[in-house]
Length: 125
Image 1 (cartoon, rainbow, N blue to C red):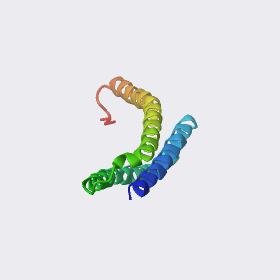
Image 2 (cartoon, rainbow, N blue to C red):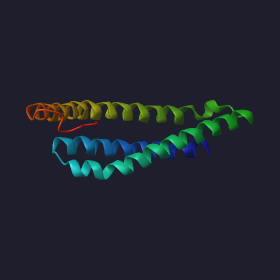
Image 3 (tube, helix red, strand yellow):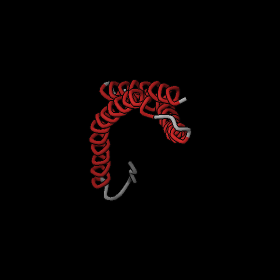
C-alpha cells in the first residue's frame, strides 16, 4: 500500500511539474488564457497530492503498529522527496517570474489612477 501511494504521488507531482513548466513557457509567450485554463487542474493535483500525503502518513503509522520495519520503504520515500524538491524549485522559479509581473501591473494601475486624480481601480493581487 505504501508503495502504491508513493507511486501515485510521484505521478501527480510529475504532472504538476509539467504544468508549471508549461506555465513558465506561456508566461514567456504571453499566453495568459492558457495559464488560466490549467489552474483548476493544478488545484486538483495539489489537493490530491495533499490527500495522498495524509494517506501515506496513516499507512506508515499502521505499518509500524503492525511491527513492520518501515525502513523497507526508504528508497521509495527518498524518490518522493527528490520529486518534491524539484517541484519546489520549479514553483519558486514560476513565482520569481509571476511576482514581478504582478507588481508591474499593480504599479501601472496606481500610476494611471494617480494621473486621473484618484483611485480609479482597486487592485487586489
